[in-house]
Amino acid sequence: MLASEIMIRYGELSTKGKNMKDFINRLGKNVAGVLEDYSGIEVNWNRDRMHVILNDQEEHSADIINRLTHVFGISSLSPAMKVEKTLKAAEVAVQDLARELYEPNMTFKIDTHRADHEFEYDTMALNRKLGAAVIDAIPEIQAQMDNPDIKIRVEVRNKHIYISARTIPGAGGMPVGTAGTGMLMLSGGIDSPVAGYLSMKRGMEVEAVHFHSPPYTSPQALQKAKDLAAKIAQFSGPMTFIEVPFAEIQEEIKKHVPDGYGMTITRRMMLRLTDKIREQQGGLAIVTGESMGQVASQTLESMQAINHVTTTPVLRPLISMDKNEIIDITKTIDTYELSIQPFEDCCTIFAPSSPKTKPTIENAIRYEKALDIEGLIERALAGVKRETIKPGSSQDDALEETFNSIL
Image (cartoon, rainbow, N blue to C red; front, side, top):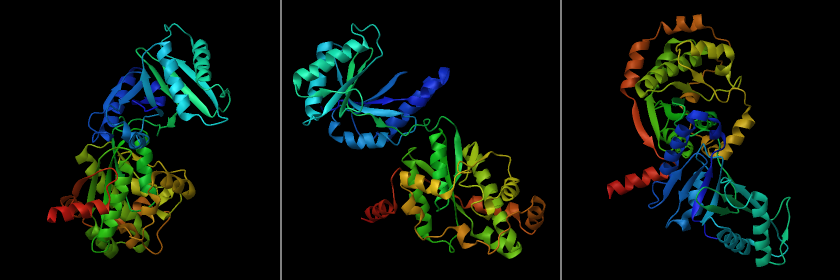
């Protein structure tokens, strides 16, 4: 059976009460956005289901389904055939689908869901009649209620009946864009892309802020961060990437701040800059990849000393996770191999030999008096660069684009 559309189910969105319509509208726009390069596709939605009408794009259904599994807000989806709302049409459709899927000794089950309770047959009657139709078409097939080889799902809705045999898990969560915008402090490491991904899953639109310190950090390190942004952009759509020059600040910290407090002051300066950029971008929060106790700057004392420079909410989605849990997610979202590439970011290059694990706010303020904080921030903000990172783009794409422009 060649699916005529993809049926999308919402899951958690059904709990949103009076706000449900806004969440579903946003999901519809996000779905249309990830499929915008497929001409002719229609996306329609109501309170119960969303329908991606394939029209002439049926041969691309595998890629379309793959894209949809990355869209937050989707509980599950099924390639489906829409038929007339009659028993006869449903019988023909389930027979055709069973013939297509059947192999010797397979079992089957009809699983009917009836949204239209005015339909002439109830759920049990439809299960019996459609099951009988399948046995008429394939006499040797056996019905089995538990763990059948073929499970044919039948949904009787207001205007049509939908037949499917696959229910594919979606990404879950909430549609990106329903929870405001946050600034993700994106390094080139393992943790921060996962923090961005988890924030998107709760509906946040994420913009990436990356600190770059040439000549101490390489162009490859910068490109690695952009490639990581492109990986997580597959779950949100195009992402704003903000590159912040940071070399002068790190040089000044190295020159004037005791080694043990170097990381604390560095993180305080990063947080100040990110907060300024958040104001410019209209963001509501800052997101970091910190996990409790993982490194010296991630103790409670360090977090308190660093957070002191802002009243903006600093969200830490990984705070209670251990490294193995985080790595498991990197493999799911395909950022692990990128993250372990040996291109060091600015935090690694300037890492002190013995960072304080219990810094105090008072000492941080005292050491910062040696720095021209306002001047350093002003000059860094003047050098900020912004670009849009598309989902799945990479260094190879950038090189190809440059090559084409030369031609």
